Image (cartoon, rainbow, N blue to C red):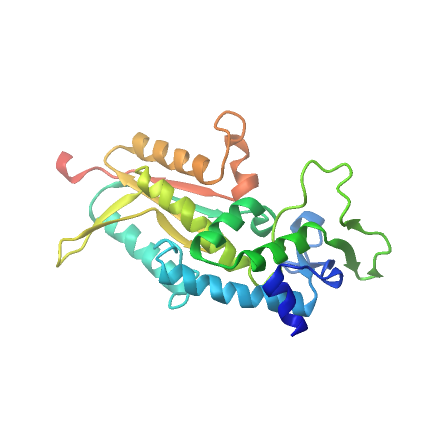
Length: 278
């Protein structure tokens, strides 16, 4: 019964509000701090609460059609489907002799950049209980962090319930949070839908039924492959850059030069002669 109190009331126990920041290697023998991955080691029952919530969230989101068709991080799909469909799309565009652009993006520190208010609205939109969402985010905002290295755990800490010197409460959902991937899948689906409705997408036509549908690209959690095609190379690249600016909330004048730092994005443009000009 005690384990159900946070779920039913939104109460966050004090022992949940501790986190051990463990930095692990992303690449073999690469020890630079900026190249390491920071995992949040959370209280087991807190992460179990998050895992229960993410199962409910993905079930409700699929039931209500709230997961974008571009997002492959969902039951019944995997990264192999993502890679295959991307390859087939590029082959088809080359066959049609169209100019096409592919932006391969990997959001840097994705789980640490999620704004709680946006994530809360996205979760409430699909029907997740308010008390479950509040219990998780209140815990994260008031969490005390210590660092773990090869020399042991640090004596000093940061965070806690006092926000002295902070403009806002700490955001993000932490690497290692069991609910992290599902939260990003639901939140990114809202962004994909907005971009698709604004026309930043590619149109496809089924061979047999002649039905048409639109796609923005292919995504697996925070790894997104954005696609754009057309008859004019400049128009294709212009749309792709606008798509990246909107998706990653960049300032066109000041941030575009730093696009790589934020998204680790490669933009590839292939310009082919249109068959009508032959």
